[in-house]
Length: 117
Image: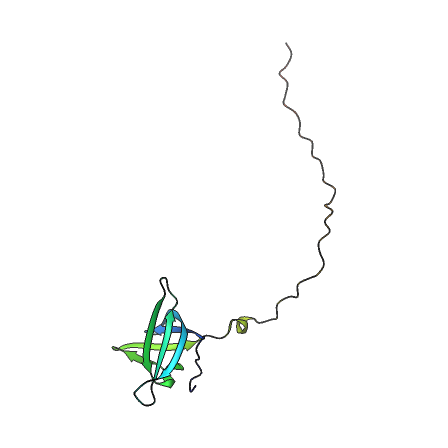
């Protein structure tokens, strides 16, 4: 494949220089126009939508382009593990002590009795 974006990648599509929607790339195939590619992706909205755009490989990889005069840019998102700054904490095999601490009993005063008389 001649693009950094690959099937299975999640992309963020910017419209007019603003994040607009996420998509999952389903396939990238050669187009009949030499040097161009068909990128088919699922737009991650409710309901799901599928789109196919015909683009140059550089545009699939993030070079800005226009559609009907509207500026568009595709951004490939990193793998989720790339968001982690530190490795996750190891899970402790120790189990907490099942014996609860001795409960403390708090006495509440009973109802007040009316004065005799």
